[in-house]
Length: 213
Length: 359
Ligand SMILES: Nc1ncnc2c1ncn2[C@@H]1O[C@H](COP(=O)(O)OP(=O)(O)OP(=O)(O)O)[C@@H](O)[C@H]1O
Ligand SMILES: [Mg+2]
Image (cartoon, rainbow over all chains, first blue to last red; front, top):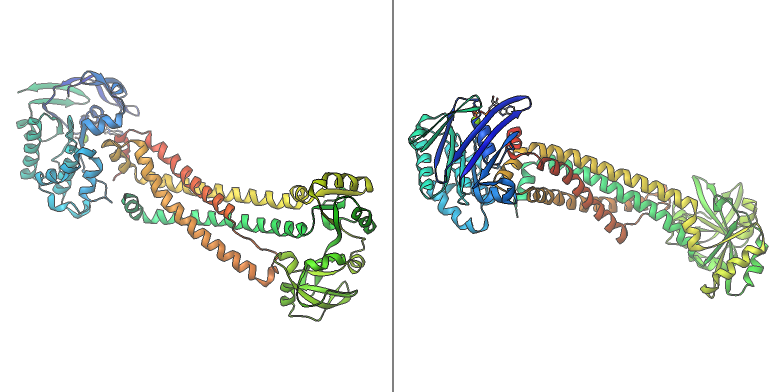
């Protein structure tokens, strides 16, 4: 899915945190958004993923405004996956139930294979406070991938993982990316650059540089 | 789905609070409605026993104050369509050690509407006791009313609490006791279609008389209106309290669960799905609270019924209609209490919800 943002601005109260963002993300690409803490990565990701309405500006998805896609909920469910900076699993549901809650009907039989692919197939009946941070994060990633969305947004997906697990997550993203899913990943982690084909550098609410490989 | 139960268990403290506040307000609605309904229905039942038409003094505030001439009974009895006229004196007096007891002076024709369980109908200077008051006074052989001693000639049993806790005597004794000819006439008809004509004729008989069908009398009776209005007001207040309790509790719950709802929105669940989940949680609570309140209320009513202190005067019953009404009220309570905070939360962007509350 091609995503184009024009003139994005965002304010929290009176504080402006995005100041006129223009960018275009190619379908099937793997884009990294890097920048210092507070530069506006999470805010930008939230707006691009429809989870936050921008104060100003527009985002189009395959040249259509969000409103032209019909129900925003159905759009999210079908096309968007989001991996949060913190795992954000629902604590009274098991890992498997968390994934199943997101899964559309036709993807329910994909839950177990996907969990296996992420190495958490034995943890399905556990609750999020009964597994390790890395396992939680992998469950959250499984939740974001279950409906084979067009775009997956990931905000510091490896923040709580050791190097080995972090590389594993990026490998997985790249695999899915080859299967035509667009990835947009925000991170401090410079290693992400090895996996990305586009790197967007943020500084103080503006895009400082875009580089492609 | 089991998720509502899991969510309830996770939030068990607040679940318990909501459950308790709902149970209390539903019980309050049950009790106040049942008791006031009981008072009205007992009194109506008493008047309806062989009375299609009630004749009272014109313009009186209460049947207790009504005073009409007994001799009107004869011309009324001769009217076309009239089967029987009985006179009834309604009074109240203390009977040691009870502070107030209903006293009924009745014309002889009406005695047979009291079902004797022992003894015989009273002559001059004698009284019948309702089984309840007979038991409370420990089966006395005589009682004292206004310094005058009356022998107990028998005991009767009545389903109407007022009567079962009351004293019945002849019309003459009643008239002397309360210094009046009679309070009201109860007129029974052979032919109900004649009732309009009979009402008209009675009206022409004396300018001091007021005749109404028993049904319209009961509808317009001030005491009933007062009882009904106050019970409606108290019931409505209990309902409001219930809603307020649930709304405030639910907004706390929704607030606690902002993060959870934000996550649900972010994975594409619509606000209506989330509201439905929340509703199924509150409905489970509401149904349990309804069941518990029903049980508690039946228990309390049973206790009241058998409390000597009330002499059976307070006798509430939870009728099927009341049950349905209160059930609807409980569900509405849950709906409003959940929808308000849930709709509010559904307007906020998922990311803001997630940032404001954890999962
Ligand atoms: N909900 C909020 N209310 C007010 N200010 C906010 C809110 N969220 C973020 N900010 C502010 O907006 C700015 C950008 O925040 P954002 O989270 O987008 O940065 P970031 O690049 O993701 O940082 P990090 O790398 O630390 O996650 C920061 O200055 C932050 O303090
Ligand atoms: Mg961030």
